[in-house]
Length: 252
Image (cartoon, rainbow, N blue to C red; front, side, top):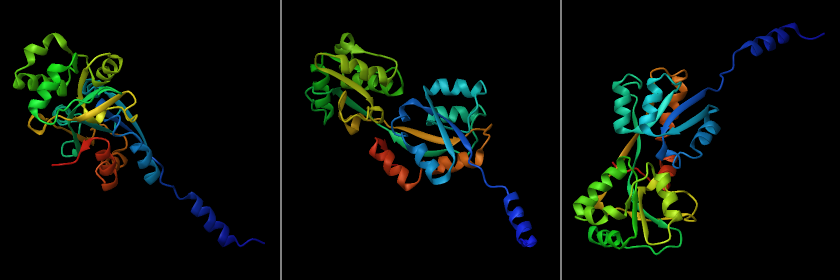
């Protein structure tokens, strides 16, 4: 005959609720797609929590939050993060800086690599280019100012192309035939070993601009504890090392 005490104990243990894995939904600015590749999977392996990363243009992310789209956390540029916080969509004080993105120059795979090591060298390279392609977002707006500072905005006006986002810049550079130069966020360069476009170098330090990115919790998060664990994971030493390898600057 089975021991009744042991049977009761086993039944009681089975009745204890097991902590369930949470589903976390994170709205992210598009330039972080490459740097965050595989990060959600690494977090799931460590914690069991599943993370869905949803990428889009930053201002569209704000509109989606305002429309009530479900999200537990966000990864946005500082400007958009602060706007979302002021609008009541992001929890005040939850923001964690995960790094900053700098601007660099790309050319078509196999094309000659220009010298852009100094402002004067960059100026020569741009004047020698057949086309100069840069986006209409924050990094492109900054670069338009760089052209003004270099005194060549007028000279390059007819040869400048301004698509909406970096993905369109890469497409135009890849399809080009001449000495075409693209200016993009370095972290957005395709991780294909230079098979489509090649990163030449960052803009010279005197002309560089860095855009900080912040992660934080939304005010309507369904899984705030797990979401907070994920944002903290983004600043762990291991994750920071991975992000740094992918062009996310960690300097303060």
